[in-house]
Length: 227
Image (cartoon, rainbow, N blue to C red; front, side):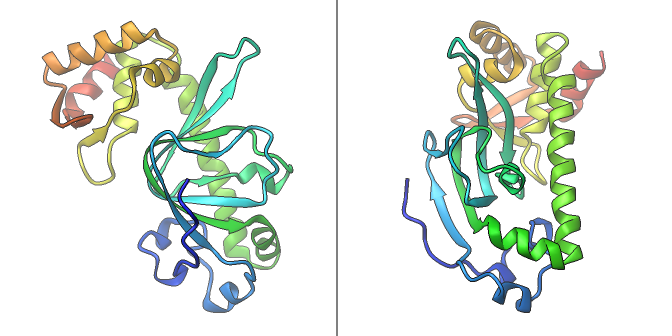
């Protein structure tokens, strides 16, 4: 893991309007005695593990992280993907430990801030409290979509839903990761994931721009979902 890079300029953050601290003022930030820090992590690096004591929350500035839980037999299940503007570690506001293993899938920039500061500010700042509730609802909505769109139905529909969810903001493009991870997300075999991707390429539903970076035919993918 790269070293934390020190204080970040929250007031002038490029994603501040959609991030957790969007409603805070300069006076609010003065109450955060521990610094808000920024870090860049590479694919495969671990942010935290299941059961680690949580002292911080994290906002994803850019990139992609998988949240993993392990079954008794050691099998991993990817329970959620988090990307730009998502918040990780909300559970430590009510519990002391992280509930997932957070593993980087694509080079990721994060901001890290102390949970005690979030708790203190949320008690006195109604805007932050509302933003926290919105983040909880966002995570719940993602969990519902995971169950209804990514874990049931035909493999083609699951894959189409996943590709659309991976779509880059403001563009009909996405980055893919390993077929093993895709199989874990969609509850299908690696072979089925590979075969489905190959078929989507043949049908021009996805066109490779550069390694693991694809242009998506959103209309065609939505047609598969609706079929």
